[in-house]
Length: 160
Image (cartoon, rainbow, N blue to C red):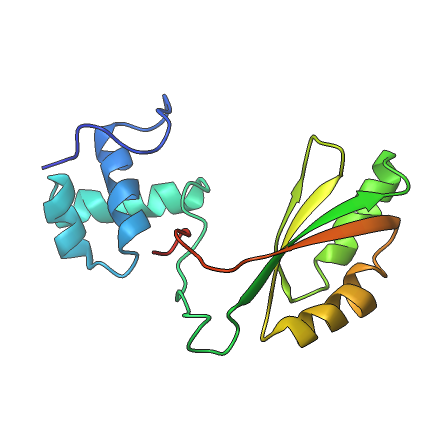
């Protein structure tokens, strides 16, 4: 039976079955079509059609393996505030493009604050983070200053 309340914002393009499907897939992207159909209250064929439509329209951007960073030896997380020396559109775009080339930067968000960007940086340890900060982040275009906040414990993230 479809869920009555989705944790995602209501969208006029999505009906209750679509929202239920998105809710289920957000929790288990490897669920079989048969099980997904049962969970949302439809048969297999309409579920497949809806899944294809949601993917084509961009509601579902893809499916991937969620890796355990601790088991992979990448459990050091730091958040880095970045203040730029230039915030004109061209400088922002140059910074944005350069960030995409740094694999240790897991997330990058432009922030409305007394700094310009907040980066989530994942490395093996503090020594590696120092190197990434000095050699990569500080060398990004227009970086004027940075501040670092080291994560001591992850209480909740998107994959827990």
